[in-house]
Amino acid sequence: MADMSDVVDQGDDEAAILAAGKVLLERLIAVDDWLPNEYARPHPERYQQYLLHCDSRERFSVVSFVWGAGQATPIHDHTVWGLVGVLRGAEYVESYRRAPSGFEYSAPPAVLQRGEVDAVSPRIGDVHRVSNGVEGGVSVSIHVYGANIGAVRRATYVPDGTPKPFISGYANTHLPNLWDRSK
Ligand SMILES: [Fe+2]
Image 1 (cartoon, rainbow, N blue to C red):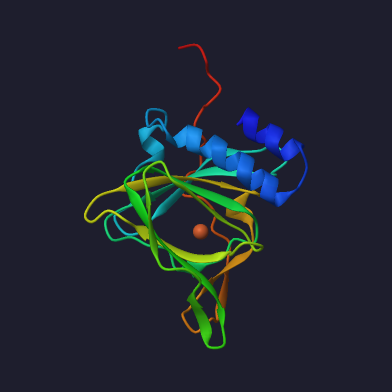
Image 2: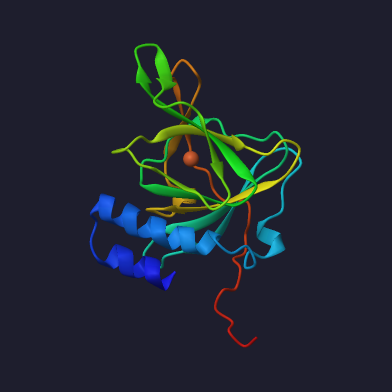
């Protein structure tokens, strides 16, 4: 988290933040021994997003996404930069761009494997749909966004491109204590 603060302290060059943040996120997800179970727990009906950390000035936030079997997001945007890294399992990512009749794929759908990081932003492509990439199992990904993402006004889309405003919020009301170093 301190390293990510250093990155955003360098300025708001988004390409530089994404490049440096990707390296940090790759390092974070390379080892799967730190995420408390409480923030890796799937919900029987819908994917979960747990806030793990928010920069005190809300310049970035770190979130765990937990995908139960068959769960997926709607098509949605972010309006800020984001990094998506797979900690456990895999994610199926469909990236979209505007088309005359709504949205079309901007790239072939891809499977993001454990340890891999993808990026989104209004500059490089901000609209996607993400699904659990593991059949019948649970996947967990760690996302870093350039804002307190749960409070950002953004949109989900129906396939014809009609936006529906949403503010995602978070599934948790408490944060993990990442600062107790007594053990
Ligand atoms: Fe997303």
